[in-house]
Image 1 (cartoon, helix red, strand yellow):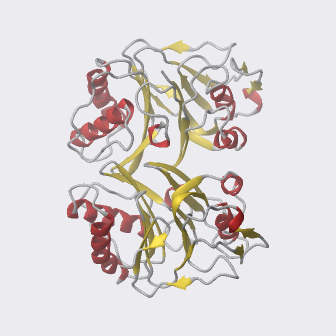
Image 2 (cartoon, helix red, strand yellow):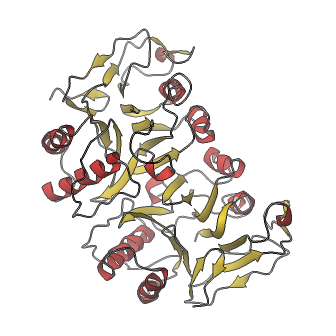
Length: 255
Length: 255
């Protein structure tokens, strides 16, 4: 099993604090040492970093911890291989282009016997169940819509697609196209919405605290979604099993 | 106009020496300061770095200079914007997936009035002539072949496609799918094939030398393709105008 981290904000925000704790799970405080990756949207553009070294040792992860890349939509993943070899093409998140937008996907879980025939324009480069599921989702999105759908329309489509995959195993995933962050839980996912008045937070995986009040303005809103809580002194809301949530401008939409 | 750098090798090789000189052209020894990017194949996987900061100042470029990522196929680009804004989605190289392989493309030049309708599955995310040309090439490749073609077949198809674009302006480009490096020149492109016995080389853009004999084995072969020569004491072979060359295992194929 792997771990997922997502961030969605109403203003470009750096993820260095959350990533510092999260990256420790890539081989140090937890055993997810089979590679990692992170993708940051900047407007429609994308920075995408993957590495098959453990996140806690990777020079690329060290860059991310130190270089505050600001983004409104971030998806990160650390891998514990269940299907597929440990190599670069099997590192999440995966990226495809559709309708002139990049789409980023990461998955935590294990899908048994989910290898539908891919008759569309998206094919896996690696050999994971996760990338196969992503390509199937992209194929079905392309069939369901003629162009980039509204956030609400896309949410409805994903609510139809996710259960069809989830019945094959554990399907916690995150998806973003630079407009919103969609997150679906089969088992473990939780989230927090940070807003004014901002407080101090203390990492669970490293002895590090931050006073968000010193780094934010009163209008900032930041939602963080993660496999298990990143901080010890905040209240994280767990997803229900089978729940799909969409985050826009740092808030979970009510439906 | 921009600058291009490509490397093709028979064994995974790091590009740090060439990139050290090349990155200086991104704002220091030359005026290509509107972003940069680099992509490294590792087997079928890809590391892709883009940054809209000048290459000579970018923290990500600093990582590439110091972290010896070994690859058999590398494409890098530093940008002097002619069409399209300075932002992340307009930074080369561009990446798409087709037939379960990543395809990487970078372009130097200026295409006037080349905006064919894209009726296939590839659409630009940014607004450059370059990404539009890449999407058109991918669309035409998808129409011309049923799956990943042989290197020879793909070379024939590119020999048909490249002149159709080149008549609209300057079209120096590099393309790789992790099997070979294709390079096409309208104006400026040159290459070198390094092999045993290896010699010392001195960078043109920085006071730096390397003795390749100390970092290689006798069977290593490395081809480097670049807009203008990177070193002062080696003989670089210029491309003819309209020439498309394909590099495999560090050698230029004879046709």
